[in-house]
Image (cartoon, rainbow, N blue to C red; front, side, top):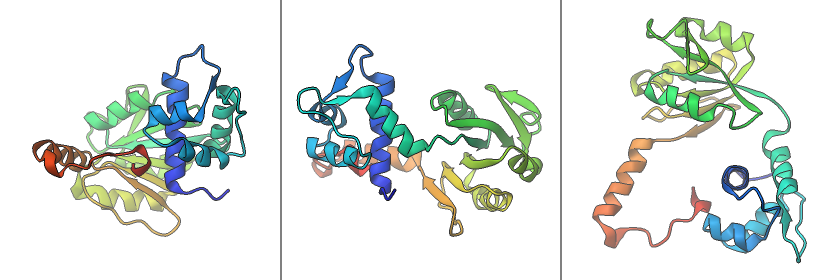
Length: 217
């Protein structure tokens, strides 16, 4: 199925909204209602949902349980993904807690850190190993995705080790860009830069974008 990364991102946001925040007593939703909550146009919502092969009916809209099921089929493909958090500092531990049980197909099975006070312990319900054991644990536990929460100075070296060990997808929170080989998926999130952009436009309201839609995220 050929779906762009932007559409995939929006589908994930639709699912989160419908499963975590939408009133449980509601069984159906119209595209214009979902559009209003997402800050998108109803036509954009309908185009995205057409990618699922699921269509609403004019009188009732989309059945929410069926819509979520179709999104799950596309985003997860019913496969369990083992995830590791690399860097068990404040951010890493916060992510372990936040992501616990949020998606049945994404399971954090290990954490890694070179601090001996954190290694060989269970942190936030996740076993933490020393960085020396990355290759062994990644291969043993079939870890395909890693969340990188290490200092910028070591981010590339740690990335190279993860890729060598068999990791195929990296979510990078380190404050530097990293290089990956062809065949490895990378998403980078720079929290500091994002906050600085907000601060800049807060202090320079005349230069602020008039509208920021979820579709651009």
